[in-house]
Amino acid sequence: MTRFLLSALLAPLRTWVLLLPIAATSHAAEPLVTEGIVNAPVAEVWRALTTVEGFKRMGIAHAELEVAIGGEIRTHYDPDGRLGDPDTIVNEILAYDPERMLAIRVKQAPQSFPFREAVRGTWSVLYLYPLGQDMTHLKLVGLGYRDDAESQRMREYFAQGNRGTLDRLIEHYAPACARCEARDER
Image (cartoon, rainbow, N blue to C red; front, top):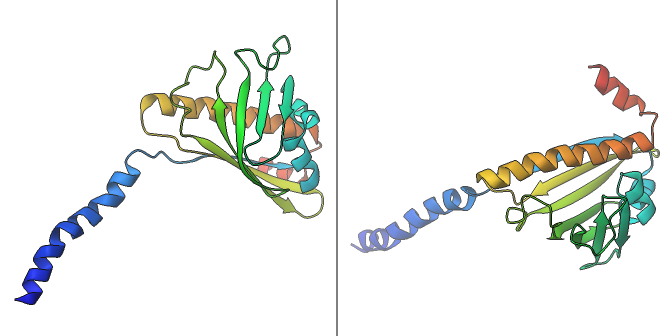
């Protein structure tokens, strides 16, 4: 009798627990991953990600940043624009581990950004992995994308943008590393 009562009392809980993973994953799209090998040491790639000069190497016209938890990275792609105007991008630094990881989220999207609602709740983590002394594997992971159409269009937008930005950084440190050339030949 006790076994039956305990089973009857726990039955609703088992149903809820079984449904919980389904509910938790039904609104989460796969992370957006962009990777590349930069022909520069980790310390140099870190400087590229955390200094005004480094942002310019990636094709960003104007930049201003404070590397601190809660610090902001303010950027503008338009050479005729100015920081603080409606098309300034403001990212907030969520976490960082110097020369290893930088986590950011869009705090303010530019006025012209077509996915202003979808960008809320997304964030990016940049990982730096040393490949010997002179090369770095840079991995950008975009998280928080949803399955709805607007979020998926934004994901595609960032897939192209992240690839272009990373490629500009790689090109800045060209020639490509031997490992990169071997991968491209395959």
